[in-house]
Amino acid sequence: MKGPFDLRSYTGFRAITVLCLIVLYAPLIVVTVYSFNASQSLTNWEGLSLRWYADVFTGPESGKFKIAARNSFVIALIAASVATAIATLAATGMVRGGRFRGRALSFGLISLPIMVPEIVLAVATLIFFNAIGFDRGLLTILLAHIAFCIPFAYLPISARMQGIEDSYEQAAMDLYATRRQAFTRILLPLMMPGIISGFLLAFIVSLDDFIITNFVKGAGVETLPTAIFGSVKQGIKPNIMAISTLLLAVSVVMVTLSYLVGKSDNTK
Image (cartoon, rainbow, N blue to C red; front, side, top):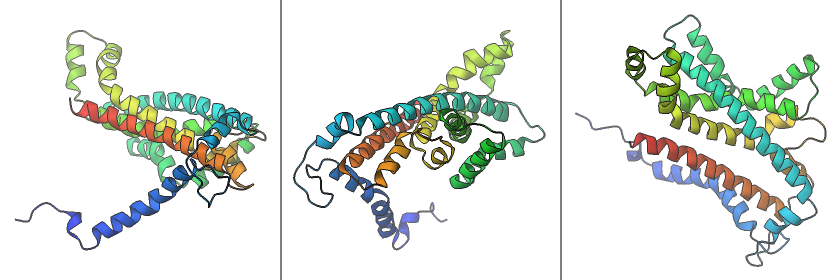
């Protein structure tokens, strides 16, 4: 009888893995390292310095980046909250609603933003807003982000709910709890790790999004990714590397928190 399938046994697996890791993470490492470079040059290393991080908060472009960062975090917070609430309701209907007509179609619609190329979603969203005469601005970015973040919040919430047996709710209703009470007092607390993971994932997706934001934002409205892109078009500066490193750090922290929340719950 053959043992379990082990992909590592194939010739060249390690070499390909190392190559993929280099291609993925080498640019991030370079940006991070050179954000601490004391020199204004992007090629000459003159020692470690935090001058470009100080420039982000006190330099001539600091006002623009502060406004863009505020817009990004406010939009990400609201979009993640609304998307998580919608995803929780959708997961409840899909997982606990039993079989119903259109269930497969509903799941396809929820998953569509993940499967469709983001540039297609951006163009479609822009055409939709123009068709209904909706002025572009912070509100259009927020609405687009909510729609785009729903499937990212739905996946961990749905996975968590599928791992919870419905016997808990049935036992609560046997003890004269209503469906609402069984949901709010039994199912919802058990789902909380998945809800937190879904929120964190939706938050970071919204915070880092550039393509959709760049299409639906109005004139003079910037988020941190679009502000970085606008500065890069005028030339890559060391302060851009510092901002990119800070944004990368926030992303890593959020993803790590999402992972730890799910892992800590699974070990119980």
